Image (cartoon, rainbow, N blue to C red):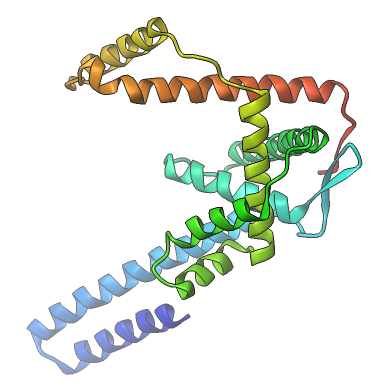
Length: 251
């Protein structure tokens, strides 16, 4: 609101100066007026986009799905869909188009169902995050901010409270323990690294870009391939868990 008031005042002052001043002052006032108008238009576009994004959200207390008698609430849905909307915007895509909205909705539900199934499996196998692990991770998160005030502001902006954040951290730790023990990605072979490097080299040549030597890129390529294998393992495990699960999508 303060920013909007500032824009309106700038525009108003430009009009007043134009009426009172000479030709040079009129030109300067016109430039200020155009700048203020452009900023106002940009602000309006941002507000319109935010409104469209929020229209894809649901009531926080609404049950969006039930997985083995465990409810997934609208608050979880909204947090996940907001993250996917942000990713799509960073890729230069419009998440508010009809096609994109349906895609994001499906991805959000699939993600939440898969995560719930994995956490249920982790619970059954006895994986749990200790209080010390949660506090350690929480300190790492807080350490990304200069002050406690900045952290609190970011937490509020995300729509989470401290209890929700701690729960999310605990679930992340629990899933990490489960994945490391139950779904190891396996070793990445030199042949796989060489194949990935050759593909990267071809892409670099087609884009007329200089490609670093294999020795320089090997750690990065190996990490990327391990992540891919891990994602494949997780996807396969989720599909396996779905076979014996009772899943009821409500939206």
